[in-house]
Amino acid sequence: MRNVILIGFMGTGKTSTGKMLAQKLGCAFIDMDVKIEEEAGMSIPEIFAKFGEEHFRKLEHELALKLSARRNAVISTGGGTVKNPANVEALKKSGVMVCLQANVDTVLERTQNRGTRPVLDKEDKGDRRQAVEKLLAERAELYKQADFAVDTSELSPLQVVEIIA
Ligand code: S3P
Image 1: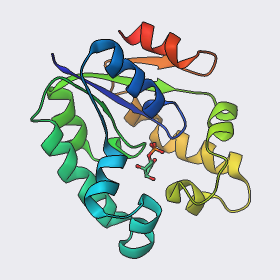
Image 2 (image 1 turned 60 degrees about the horizontal axis):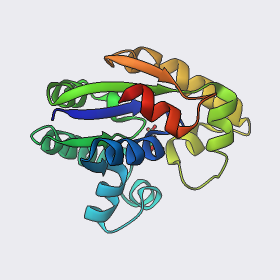
Image 3 (image 1 turned 30 degrees about the horizontal axis):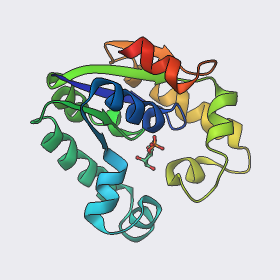
Image 4 (image 1 turned 90 degrees about the vertical axis):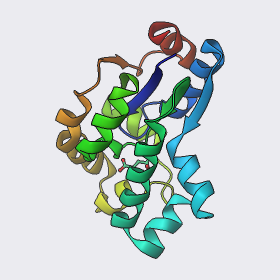
């Protein structure tokens, strides 16, 4: 089976949908963020704090290249994986790329907790909605590189899985 690669902004449901989709398809599930954390032996906020975003992006890029060589997996990317065109190119060659979308209210609801998403925390100068809107606008074009998109705002993870499957 070709891979299914889930891209999309933070809080669009890449991880929860990905796990269920892999179960349905009977294939492996790989969460890039979890893999990076396991390999680094520390959490993503810790990687950002200790080594900076650039280092995280390097680890993310190396992993994207590695994963693009395998098949039979649902791969959940990080929200910023698409910032590197080489990641998109490599991952797309390995399968079908699906973008999960959500409206700003839904993203806000799902990413309220500070300390877990350093990119959003950095952008948040006291107005989290503004931070989300700014990052979403900056990245809108990048997420359009998917083969198709699903808006998850009004759907349960199971419904999203059915659509993709
Ligand atoms: C990031 C999103 C995060 C994680 C890192 C950077 C981003 O993944 O990779 O904190 O730049 O949007 P999720 O989309 O799973 O939260």
